[in-house]
Image (cartoon, rainbow, N blue to C red):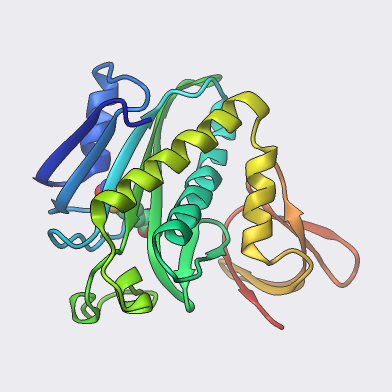
Length: 246
Ligand code: BTN
């Protein structure tokens, strides 16, 4: 990963650029990084704030030999890579929140958006989109965000070197992807679980209209959260909002 790195001053979205490159045959490991994004994409059609010069906006083309249902496992890979890079480059402690948020002191500092091109049986390519709030200042977040957000600078009080952070992150992604290809998702899932510290804890889950509580038993191979209810039933949570209750 990072054999070819394309650095842009400003673009709409690094994910859109990488997706187009991949459609045109861009090789696995190609990375697109921008200084600023004019239409940064978040999950669920949301906007990702992307002011110039302060943060990391990057997208990586992968061509893993896996089925489309297994591709969500790559999200766990990105989460773990970002957490490792935050630990290596700063003094702040990253927390992982299911399924793919990275928080510091309860506020979001990084977001992941994977986009895929696949046939029924096999993935053609996946674009891993990673945005990390490095040096953004509190007053740059505005008032429109749904969830509280922060940056590594705001949390740790020290400017983060963007080039060093990007290098560290790409090296971690590279290491983890090699593990993923050789040994599958299990080792990455266990690091995710260790870091998320939700195993064995009581949680409240809300998915749509439904709300329930239970104790987290782990993740299945497809990233679903396994929650044991008080009546002994095991719920498989594919999407929703999860918060700790004790
Ligand atoms: C989220 O909603 O949490 C996901 C945010 C993902 C943002 C990154 S920034 C680099 C890449 N390009 C985009 O347009 N989005 C992702």
